[in-house]
Length: 296
Image (cartoon, rainbow, N blue to C red; front, side):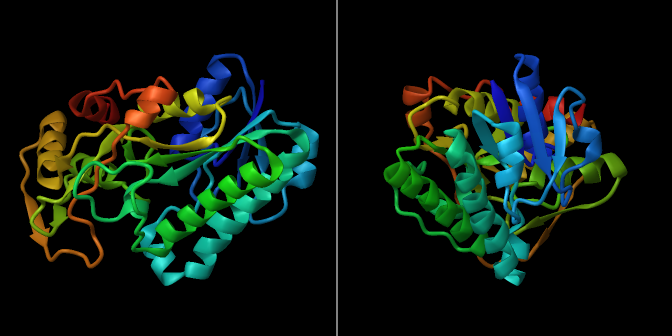
């Protein structure tokens, strides 16, 4: 099929592009290189250097995509707090631009949303129909974009899918973006720099390997719409994560602790049973194996 991947030079996007080209699809990358990197580009894909905050109609008229994996985003929580208008412009307006450009071609959109930033504090693994309580403009803008997908599905009979990612990690990740703690730890251990953990380190997150996320994206293409969590359902404390990173790096190092950051959730983990049931998808990569692949 013909597929367009927005953010296809980024961390998750470049892995999605690799998987699509490997199975023989015609792939078009849409990226403005705000955070994407040219070295991530798959040579088998066609690059369109374009900002999603600008209309995409003429580009999609040329490409005529059958599916669009929409991964381009403003994904830094701190930036969303400091520049909420910019955050909304990329994550909300940019998504509407994708939806409108896709509509004349009947193209399905698979949208990358966020779990941790939407659900807020979790008393148990969060399910898709749980209350959404974002505590940052980033979480709010992703939730608003999800609602645009759902509205287009009702209004236009489309079948767009939103995937709420847990903390994705793996090769090519940038330390500065949402959920980049694995990249932060491994970068610092590689460079012999100190590691700082905010708070007591007992806060937990759901870490899912990028290869498993790619499989979830592929499983969502062609489905009849909906919202799905993509994680592992397993909690790992930040202290435990650092210890596993230290072991895989073979480095004797201790982390320093700093005061907790306001707004950081103490517990964030996703229930992925809907994706297992309806997408026939489940995570395959244990954390230790994913960290080994990432370190390599």
